[in-house]
Structures are given as structure tokens and as C-alpha cells.
Length: 346
Image (tube, rainbow, N blue to C red; front, side):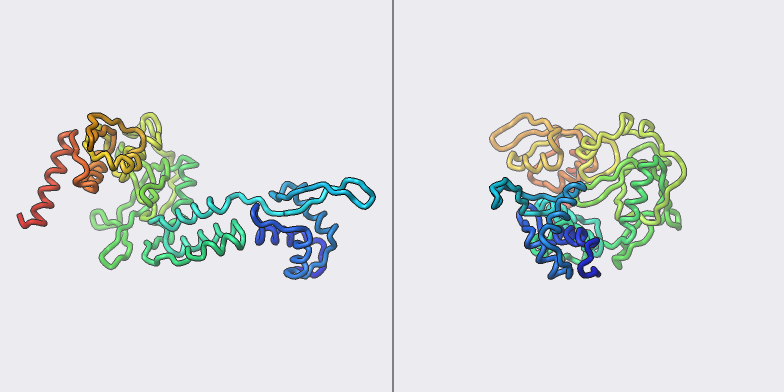
């Protein structure tokens, strides 16, 4: 690959050495770099040439770090010595580990694409980091498969940037665990959507948009979108969509739509055990109000999508009692009664 003793390729080889072998905790001396150039690339450079290439990298603005100290020469003059060379990386190991774990725990990225993304992230560090994360290759092969996922994300990103509508088919799993297009009136349903934002929620990736025929906010699982195309028509202005008349307040929207259900948000009041306050903040954020505190319980008021709150209250079962609104309280009572009949035979 490299021509022996080619001075033109020396600086490229030095960059490669720094990327493979160094970070702020693993540095190399000029002598070590000189030896690696010869052993790994067949390039013989003297110490001054190695130093010149390294300083050229610094002068050209490469993220190269080093230490310096002053020493006396034989003639008694001060001389600056540069050592401990390393590449300064965009991500430190903990940040890369966080990104890799996020991919591992995602529920919408297929196995093969997970593996490719993790391998790309590993290349952002060096051999020491790669040795620490060998276990991440042991991914489960039971994750859903949608080869169009990243293409879909790219098209949605372009459509949102250009302010254009999109059209697509939506897929569901059948009992053979195969994807098939959702059918309306005997043929695949075509969705024409005004896309506004992509968000991650509960390990899934969603599109926040508006189904063009209606005037409400809708959410779509991006991993279930197929056959997407951009339509050369401007998106419907958010001010014409119920719930977005003042624009999309994303933190508020996500706090109110904890399960990404569509529909209006309502004011909900519920009583809960005090020892699950952490869970409540995890789900609803800090836009909650507490009242009527006792030794064991507290009342919580929050604005949230009613359908989402129904499922959240069912999930927490005996730990939560919805007090308001009455319609939600009745829906939960009916659901609990139906469950009791199923498990206790009426």
C-alpha cells in the first residue's frame, strides 16, 4: 500500500498511527512513531523528519496534542522538546460507549444496521477502546428488520428541511412475523403526511406530523414506514393543525404524549405512592404539580394525552388511582372489571 521511503506518504502514515494507537491517555514519543513507521509501513525517517511532519500537522490545524518541556543543550542554550503525541478525538470513550449503548438498546434499528453503526463508532477511537467493547457484537438477531429505515430517515430529513409533504405505505406484522402493507378498502393505504419533526421515545423512532386529510397531530413509527417519497407540495402550516397553532414545543409535546398516542391532552389528577416519584418524573418530566401529601401518598396533577394516561395507569396498576377526569376514571374501572372477569371467570 505504501511505497518504502516515500516522504510524501509519511504524514499520512503518522496520522494513521496516531488514530490507531493514541488518545489523551495513550501517547507516543517521536522515537516510537519513528519505529512504527518502519515496522508497520516500511518507511525510514530520521528523528528530525518525524518531528517536522508532526509539527506540520499541528500547523495545519489537525487535532494533535503533545507535551513540551525545556532542556539545556550541550552549548548551554535552551531547547524545547516535544513529546507525548496523541490525536485529540471528537468523542471520548465514555461518550462513544453511551452512543453504542443507545444503539444496542434501541428497538427500531435492525441487527445488521446496529452492527454496522457500532463498528463505525468503534473506528472513532483506537485499539484500546475496541478491546473494551468486543461484547457489543453479541447482539440479538430478534430485532425487527426494515432495510429502508435509514433511507426513510434521510428522505424525512430532506422533506422537513425543504418543507415538503411525503407519501408512504405503513407496514404491520402478520402472524408469520412478516411485514405487510396496511390495507384499507381492499388495497394498500397510501398516507400523505405533512412531516414536522422526528423524535425518539421509549426506544422507538417516531415522525410527528399531520395526516393531510385531517387537522390533528399524528405520530408514525419510522421503522414501519415503507415506500416513502417526497411530494412536490408545501407542508400544511403548523398553525392550521390542532395542537400546533403556536408551533411545536417539543419538550412539552413529548411530556404530554408519553406513549406517542394521538389526540388532545387533558388535565389529569391521580393519587400515587410516594416511592414511585422517580418514575413519575421519568415519564412526565418536571411539569407536574404535587398536592395533598400524606405519609405514604401524594396527588399529582399533569397535562397529558388521555389515551396515553390510560395505558400508563394500567401499567402502574395498584400504585396509582386516577381521580380526574371522570371519563378516564370510568374507562379504567371498566378495564379493571373486564380483566377481573377474565382472570376470575366472572
